[in-house]
Length: 209
View (cartoon, rainbow, N blue to C red):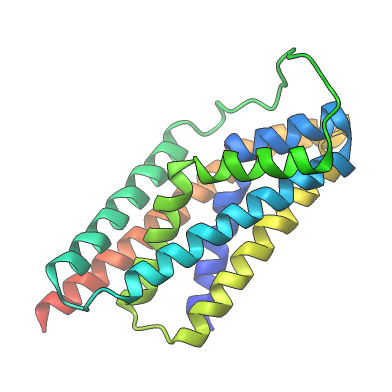
């Protein structure tokens, strides 16, 4: 349960920092309304599901202790350190102001496709889930728990993006979120650095045996 709470917290804090997927949902909600934006939300969640399955399956087939296994873990750790540092370094520099791009009507299916493409082409998504999968593999997490983590993260992505789609059109809420961004980004960076430290400790303990 402790591992679940740690993984869930790290994942959720990472969601709070705006990225390409966040701005796609925000732009869709402002331009076409929240109903159309839900299509993008579902597409993003599906792409995250693909990454989760690929990452967890890919790490699961690696033999523990092998050079490739250790390389994957070190790469994941390096990415977590980089991402955590970037969050801390650029905390407070993000903006929720939308560009003046032309607004045009799009269907729910178009939003679904746009959301999926946006998320599936974002390398940060793949690297983040490989990093989490490396942590779980290093702790010899059972298949049942891994499945639960995967389902939880897909649902968390969908729930968060749906919340953004519903709330982003509200000017007061958008201003409050903008003010809270620096704190949220610092929390995200700190949690990612802790996750990387936990992975390094597990690697060092494994190498010492």
